Amino acid sequence: MKRRLALTAGALVAAVAFSSCSSVETDAVVATANGHKLTESQLQHLVGKESDGATVRNLVTTWVQVAIVTDDGTPVNSTDDLKARITTAQAALNAAAGDQGQVSYEKGLTDADLPYFCLEAIPYDAATVEGQAILDELAAGTAFADAAVKYSTDTTLQKSGGVVTNTSTGDECIAKDSFSPDLAIAMRKAGVGVAVPAIVDLQGTKAIIEIRPYAAIGEGAKTLFNTYGVGLYLQGLYDKAAVTVNPRYGRWDGVHGAVVGLSGS
Image 1: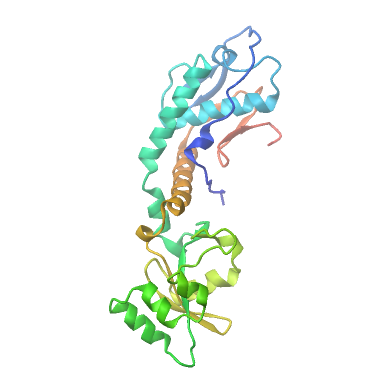
Image 2: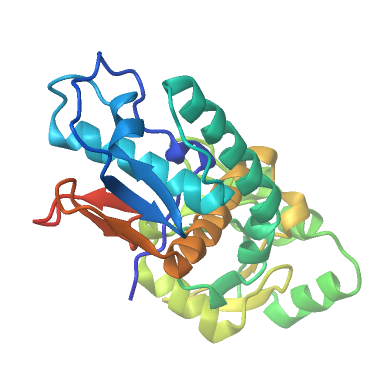
């Protein structure tokens, strides 16, 4: 399975501050992207004299990425040209993939690659209250935060209105890899969804858990999912792109969206 990227639009930006360029004797094609060409004469304006292979590949990578996103084959003859094209590409990504974060988020647990959980939970004393009774109250219109104050056996979750936060950073969405794998399994089994609470049994501890509505999470948290959504959109462009690279400069790795050495690095 291809690794899905988690890129911001800014990840298109490779280093473009290079020293003066050595001359080239030909105008061979360095790379093509969906029919657009980067030639050695264009590369001459951008690559520094005695630049190492990694620097050159980073530059060619940036050109390929920008050409794929913008579908613009206008020659790039200066670092200013490239910077302007990067800005255009960033705007195009934001416009085309602006809602992808919410789309991905609202897939909930069905998106196995989603990197964060934004949860709210009410651990409760199963000896004194029925979980279904709490679910019934929520279904009748009781706010999750009010139910957390009323029923939560965890004082921290009482104070947060049930919002599960990273205890170290205070972030309201938690990286999935920081949870026990059993949590995702238990939530899936219980039928937890976005704004869909369910009773989850965590090794004997009962809790009402739901994925918070997208509208309820903060802007900082939304940025995490927008970044993820843009990455999915960008990977889709890479998957469909027709890219070639002159072997002198490396090869195109569509999974990672980069020009790499012939050895793969």
